[in-house]
Length: 208
Image (cartoon, rainbow, N blue to C red; front, side, top):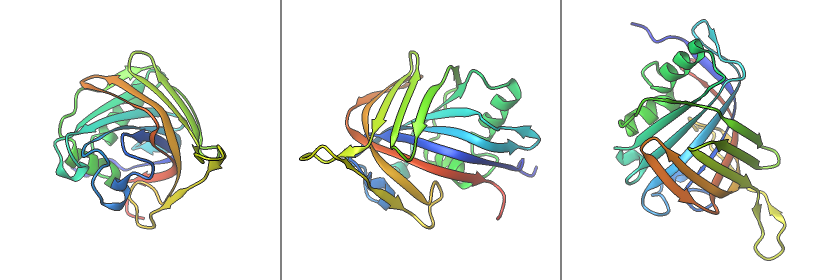
């Protein structure tokens, strides 16, 4: 059967256990040899087949024993409890990677361990321009990000990564994950003052 056509646009953010800049963005090995992190997805507008996905939010938590490309990762999807049943089914199918779309296909190939999605209240505030974010999911995630600061003067230090051919984003603002604590399904970790990222996205499984 042909994949269900889908497209979503909006804001993505998150962080991981790597140092600022994250060597994985440059095809290098992760800072500590393994990868642990999360991504937040706030859809401004989008659809999965006939199902509208405007204003939905979901979070993915991930963990790999080594570098992402080495595989055997675990991927825990968290759906906002405010979604309709149809929207939950749509996002679950889309995020599975089986309906196409590079960003989710790559996750599917690298993270075969996928527990059932969790449905929880997602409390998220994020501002790409200010490089700030706060995510709270009771019993699962505590995440706080702020701008990177100059260690001498304390002034905000602005940095960006540009990937003209990137499958996840073309340009991202860098930040500092002040706190990144996860206890979601089988994944648990805690990190402080590590990599944070803020970017717009436009993902689809359709040729453009």
